[in-house]
Length: 136
Image 1 (spheres, helix red, strand yellow):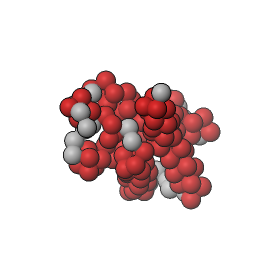
Image 2 (cartoon, rainbow, N blue to C red; image 1 turned 90 degrees about the vertical axis):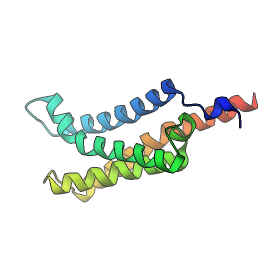
Image 3 (spheres, rainbow, N blue to C red; image 1 turned 60 degrees about the vertical axis):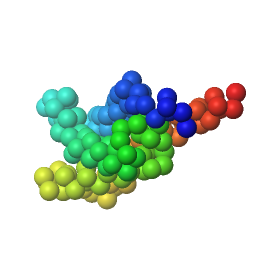
Image 4 (cartoon, rainbow, N blue to C red; image 1 turned 30 degrees about the horizontal axis):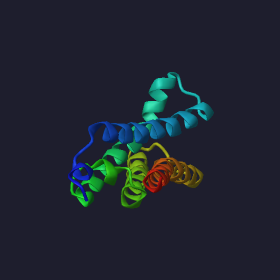
């Protein structure tokens, strides 16, 4: 492995984190369209904050597992994608439960599926593109 591969790449890390945050906000916003609130922005943030806390916890846990915030590690489907997804979902649901925000089984199923598809999906696509570029 070259020295370049081990160096942190802040732009890639920022893009990866931005994608994760964006998908959590899209998830929260999609729920807000079916559940009317006085303020759409506050409604999205009210739904999103438990999952954003879980997302940060997942990033921190992944950094510990990967030995630091490395662009390649944080954009990998395994283990980063799975850790970030599971943490975002589990911590989000626990925080929703303790703050009486609701954890209906149907909501949990939709949340788990959407978050897995998005938080894992972009990582899978990134891995496929990276492999294709290496072969070319």
